[in-house]
Length: 130
Image 1 (cartoon, helix red, strand yellow):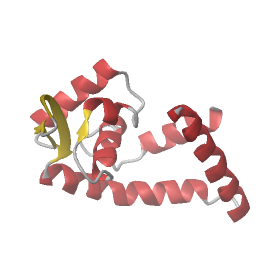
Image 2 (cartoon, rainbow, N blue to C red; image 1 turned 180 degrees about the horizontal axis):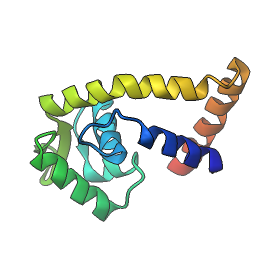
Image 3 (cartoon, rainbow, N blue to C red; image 1 turned 135 degrees about the horizontal axis):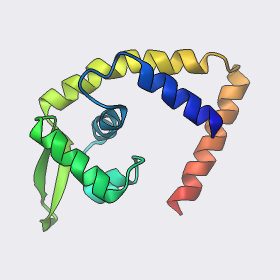
Image 4 (tube, rainbow, N blue to C red; image 1 turned 180 degrees about the vertical axis):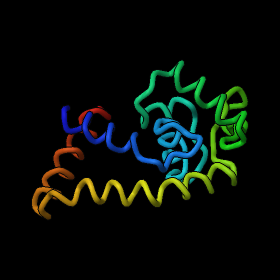
């Protein structure tokens, strides 16, 4: 947990986020990786926020024109979320320098350690999905 805290402080201190918070970027990043719009509950599985906090954040991102809501074709009461073109552009602009920062942070690990880290985090993620 200490390593996570150190990395998050380091990433948060970087001058790459513009007008976004790191958590807002996380929402944009998650939406950018999806082939189709997500329901709020699906998005919530991928971010470290409570459902109410995520709902408020999505409202702000919608108001800023970065995320859009569309009706779920399979459930007329449901809403799905996706990036707007502006949201996709900002995600890419921030994503490039952030990816370089992540690469720098992980550069202290050997290839074997990176493989171990990937295996361990993958196992933890699978356990969470059960």
